[in-house]
Image 1 (spheres, rainbow, N blue to C red):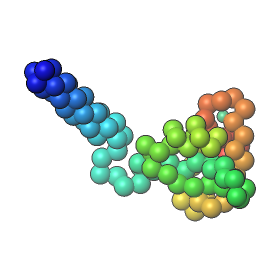
Image 2: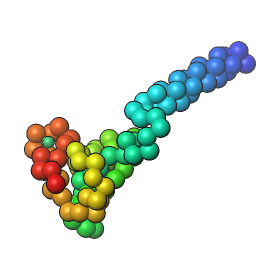
Image 3: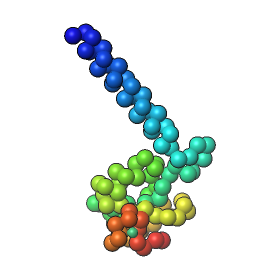
Length: 98
Ligand SMILES: [Ca+2]
């Protein structure tokens, strides 16, 4: 039984390591603090849709959970501005860009 447990532990350790490495290599930018952020049109319950900046790894959850869409611009002055979250063609990029 201890052997089975040891094998399980080894597998879990390998999977864990692979995930850590995968997430590190999945980061598209190294050394550029601005390129790992994404402007999105954020759909909020309490306020009207507006532009926010999120870390790239958080983008898919926003798209999935809030119906947010991606703003192509990298102009951080747009943060807080109202936006139109329409994405009729379903490509996750806002059809109407600021
Ligand atoms: Ca679109």
